[in-house]
Amino acid sequence: MGYEKEIMKYAEKVKSLCLENDTISDDLFREYGVNRGLRDQNGKGVLTGLTNISKVVSFKDVDGERVPCDGELWYRGYRVNTLIENLGEGFGFEKTAYLLLFGNLPSEEELFEFIKVLADARSLPTNFTRDVIMKAPTKDIMNSMTRSILTLASYDKNMASNDIGNCIRQCIQLISTFPMLAVYGYHAYNHYENDESMYIHRPNRKLSTAENLLMMLRADKKYTQIEAKVLDVALMLHMEHGGGNNSTFTTRVVTSSGSDTYSAIAAAMSSLKGPKHGGANIKVMEMMQDIKKHVSNTDDKDEIRDYLSRMLDGEVFDGKGLIYGMGHAVYSLSDPRERIFKGFVEKLAVEKGRDKDMRLYNNIEEIAPQVIAEKRKIFKGVSPNVDFYSGFVYEMLGIPMELYTPIFAIARIVGWSAHRIEELIGMNKIIRPAYLSVMKERE
Image (cartoon, rainbow, N blue to C red):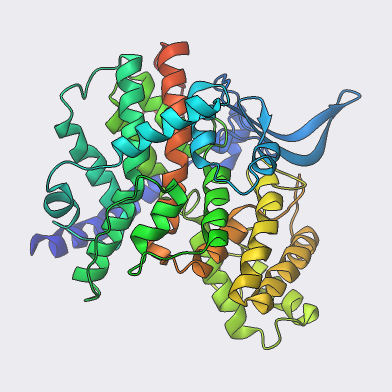
C-alpha cells in the first residue's frame, strides 16, 4: 500500500500537536483527587462493581489498620489452593470451569455431562480452518484468534440474543474451541511464514483440555502425564482473577452496553494481548535470556544482584528500569498462584533436566525483591507473580512464544464468560464512569 508512507510522514509531522495537547500532568490528577489507572498510590483499585465469582486478597484489617498479607485467590468461595490440592492425579480445568460458570462444584454426574458438552462443542464450522484461520496467517496469534471469534459470529443464527441460555451456549462453544483457534492459528503461521510442515490434528473427545492442547500442538501427538498436569494447573491458575483486571473489566463494560458475546470476548482478547496484561510472561522470558547471556555464573548471587541492580537503573536489557515478573498490581507479600505453581514447575524442571535454570529462577526470586526495595520507593511488598514462572513452563513444554498469551486466553475465557453472565443477570446498567475535563476554554 503505497499511501502508507505518505500518511506516516503526515503523522510524524502532527505528532507534536498530540504530545502538546493530550498530556495531562500528575499535578492535575492530585489536584482533583483522580487516581491514574483507577488505582491509588498503594495499588488499591477503585471499587467499580460487585461480584460473586472470585475474590483476590492481599491486605487484611488488623485492629482497624490495613496490613499486607500473603495473597489469597478464591473461586466461588473456595481457595484455589484447595481446589488444586483436591485434584489428586486428575485434571481440573473442566471441573473448575463448571464451578466458575455455574457457582457450584459439580457432582460426578454433572461433571460427566459438562465434559461431554464441551467435547461436543469442540468443533469448527465446515472449512473454517481453511477459509478463515489459514486465509491470512500472522505471527500475532491473538489477532488471529480475535478475527476468528468475530467471524464465528456470522455462523450463529442467534448471535445477537442476550438470553442467558443462549449466552451460556455461546460461552461454552468458545471455551471449547479456543484451543483449536490458537493452535491452528499457530500452525498456519508456522507453515506459511516459517516454511515449516503443516499438520492439523483433530481434538480427541476422551482427552482433557490440557491434553488436547499438547496433542494438537505436537507433530507426534505425544506428551507425558506430568506435562499435561502442569499445563492443566497453569490453566486453572489463569482462569479468573476478579472483575477488576483489565480484560475482565473490558468484558463487563462491553456486555453492559448490550453487545453480543462474540464482541465482548473479542474486546477482552484485545485487552489481554497488551504487554502490561497477558503479554507479561514474554517479557520475563526475554529478560531471562538476557540475564543468561550477560551473567557468566548464574549460581553467583552477587553477580546476579549486580546485574539486576543495573537493570533497575535502566543500564541493561530494555532500558525500562523494570525486573519483569516481580510485583503485582494487587498482591503485596506474595502471589498465591506463583506459590502454588512453583511446586509443579520444579517437578517439570526435574523431568526436563533443567535444574540449573530452576536455580537461576530461585536466585532471582530471592534477590530481586531485595534490590527493588533498596532502589525504589514502594508502598507495598514486592514478590514474584505467576508470570515469572509461566513462560519458563511453556518453554519447557516446547510451546512456542507466539502461543504464550493465547494460552492465557484459553484459560481466561472461562472467567470472562462467568463475568459476562453475571453482568447480564445482576447489573442491567451500562458502565459509564466520569472523566473530568481539564480543557482550557478558548475564545
